[in-house]
Image 1 (cartoon, rainbow, N blue to C red):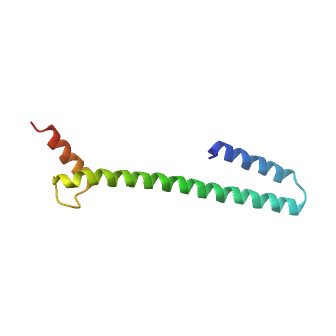
Image 2 (cartoon, helix red, strand yellow; image 1 turned 90 degrees about the vertical axis):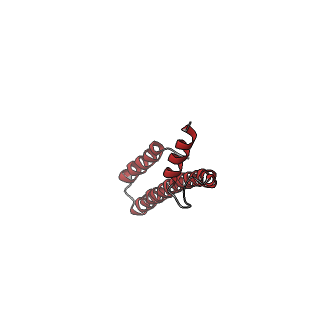
Image 3 (cartoon, rainbow, N blue to C red; image 1 turned 180 degrees about the vertical axis):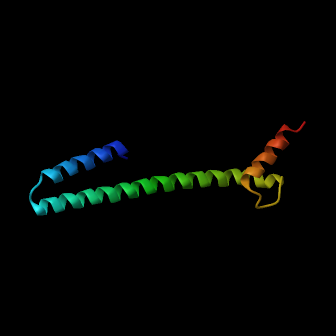
Length: 93
C-alpha cells in the first residue's frame, strides 16, 4: 500500500499539472483524477482501519473464550474484569 507521503506527492503533481493546463477539457480530466485519488485513499484508509478493528475483536474474543470457562465470574462479565480476576487467581498463594 502506498504511503500517505506518496499520496500527497501524487496529488501535488496533479495540482501543478492542473494549474499549468489551459484547456478546459484537460483541466476537467485532471480534476476527475484528483477526485478519484481522494476517494480511493479514503477507501483504503477505511479498509485498513476496519481490518485492524476486526483483528483486535478476534483477539479479544479469543481471550474471552479462554477466561470464561474458568468460572471466575458470571457469563457476560466485562473482559477487563475477567482478566483482573484471572490475575488475582494466579497470584494467590
